[in-house]
Length: 188
Image 1: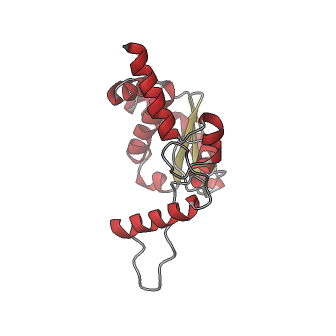
Image 2: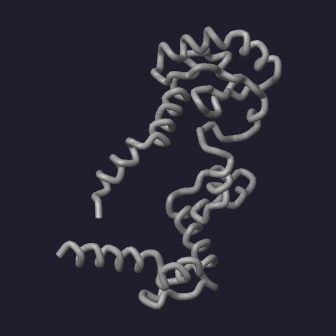
Image 3: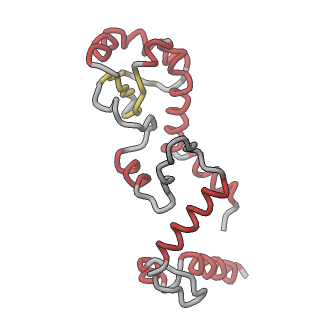
């Protein structure tokens, strides 16, 4: 088993993580590069094959910025070493809430992820922010209701998704423990 630092180092060197870091840099400098007024009407969406895709609030903004794209591209490449070769402006993604390089599939996965819990709608006059204890109680209540009808792991007796039992005959935690023990035994 590798240390967490080693695993993070390997991930950090992967191209997909490098691309995400570069995109985050671009987001941080976007208003400095294009100006506050333009930044308010635009949102970088993704870098694909060295082409920056930018959502605009209207087709008029998209058309005007298309004429300015070479100037913006020069400023962008001077400020950040991203190697972007072109910029495309479009209104297509303006109304989506995501301003990250995620693909639509990963966005859908996150929206449906079991760890993602939306707070109940606030009562009139109530703050939308949840304090940590209320958030944890809400999460714990949701997890209990989700796990009520799950079969139990034969090893630890914890509720376990059927897919884990089919794959490993135990829950993922017990499978990881067994795998780790097997690796330690093999090293001995």
